[in-house]
Length: 207
Image (cartoon, rainbow, N blue to C red; front, side):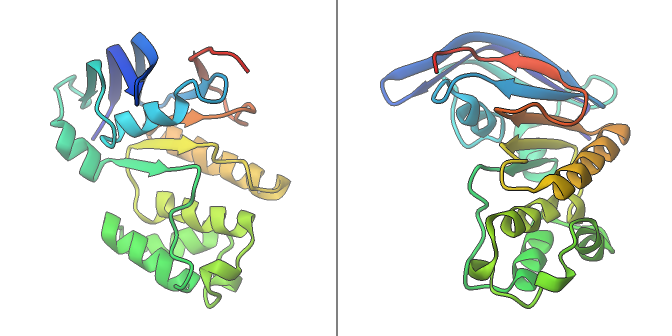
């Protein structure tokens, strides 16, 4: 299980533009970090790089277990990381039940994972509706369901609170707190502060 994420001398480039250089940062079990900075500074790209979807120009992304042993990056990314992007990545023609079931099965789930996700995010009334008929907030709750349905150590979240109303922001705050209490890790790109204690990783830039 991932107990530490370390970024060492990390540089990212998108197209011909360098987003940032020489970034050093560490995150440990039980910690959340708020990734901030101006639009276009590289917040989403950093999440994608940690998830293995973007290759750094330079530097290293490393994962460690509880004994400070290195974890193979491919194993960490395939088994122990969730990435919830700014776009939910849901199939509009599926019902919410089918989509959540697919996500839980594909990512690997606990025996009661599907039911836990439904209860945690209030999805029962939505299960027989096509995803394309859901509101933005409902779609986000459905996407977040995989965090509970298929537990993994490191959550990479891109503006996770954006479409949620006050009720579900409060509920998701509780979900994140429980994850951290269980030695989980959260790295979240945000514009507004998360409703949980966080460290800060500011990439700067201009508005």
